[in-house]
Structure formats: structure tokens, C-alpha cells
Length: 189
Image: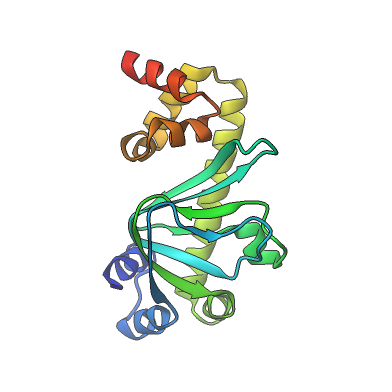
């Protein structure tokens, strides 16, 4: 159950087995169903998740119920509703498993305890934050000037799993396109 998490840690911060065991001991396994909501909008986020298998997303809805996906994560990655996790205020978004998933969950207190006491874990957290920020900036600034086809090409280049693993409907919520427009563009590329 912890093999993927250990691999994730070791490929980023080589460390000894004692540290690995201490980190893993703070995580507990969680199984989710397809489309299960792990965090509702207006709930306070109290957990960080590592995905052993499956996929998850963070999304919002507008007043008409239209979804807009902000982030997708697949096997071997972390996910949480970070603003709510950090400031402990109600989330403006939902955290949902896309397909049945095997996750490892860590509570906020244990998470910050590891950040404070295990340099390897602190370094990984910093890397996750930095890469998340960079990817978000690239997406925001790129998408502002891209037409629909350029958005799809960007995703193919930078996040190919989105189009390989997700339905057109779900991927379209990330791209800001209609599912039919996405389907037409994919068939041309």
C-alpha cells in the first residue's frame, strides 16, 4: 500500500528506511468510489491525499451548476484543496475522485509535523508547491491568449493524461471548451 509513496519520496529526496517508515506511519489508506466527493464546497479541508491508483480533481461550480475543473491528479501524485488546507477556512471548491481510487490520507496536524521535523518531507512539500505554482501560472497565462486548438495542443504537450484518461466532458471543464468543440479538435490533431 505504501510502495508508490515510498518511490515518490525516494526519487525526490533519498532518505533512509527509518524516515520512510515514520512518514508512511502518518498516512492511512482510503478507498473511494467513482465520482465520490471527499471535500464539499464550504467544508474545511483537513487532509492531504496521495494517489496510489485512480484519479482525482478539484473543481468549482457556478450558480447554474456548470463545472469548472482547476486541477487533475493521477497515480503517484498528491492532491488537496490547498487554500482551505492551509488557512482552515471553508473551501471554495470540491475535491472528487474521478474513478475508484486507492489513496493515502494524512491529517493536517501530522502533515505539518512532518514538514517541521523531517527535512526530506519538507523538501518534497516545497517541490510540490513550486511545481504546482509554475504549472498554474503556465496554464493561466497560456490559456488567456490561446484559442481552443492551442489549448488542446498545450494539454497534449504538457498534461497528456488529461485527454487520455478523462472524458471529453470532464477535460472540457478544464479547458473552458464545450465537449463537442474538444471532440472536433481532437479528431483533427
